[in-house]
Image (cartoon, rainbow, N blue to C red; front, side, top):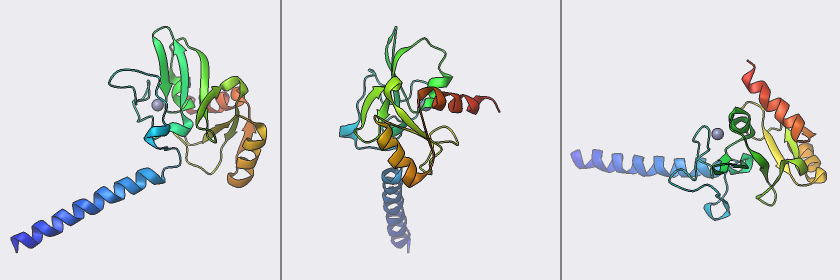
Length: 159
Ligand SMILES: [Zn+2]
């Protein structure tokens, strides 16, 4: 009887590990580790500089900036807004190429059905207006430039 309980416990642990792995895979923001570009260094290099969330898990909404103390990476535009540090050369992931591009050249789809990071309103970036429009056509949301997306992200802090 005891061994049966052990066997059941063993398999339920296995099952829950599998479920967790699947849930991680299912998250729209997540990419494979070998596609994750990390510019931060040290033990927290895979964590958002502000909230500490896992960067790889939220890679498709991540942002990158230069600061006096080196590069900083954020899980989301929300955490960029939250950062009081001075930064420049702000970049965002283009979700099609999975490369960082300057926010000054990015087109954001704001408010699509795809899940949001640290906010109720999702924001995903693209390197061309055409790609942003195609995404918005499929998943909803509004195409805007960085300033527009930034003002929407700022509203997270005004409640
Ligand atoms: Zn964050």
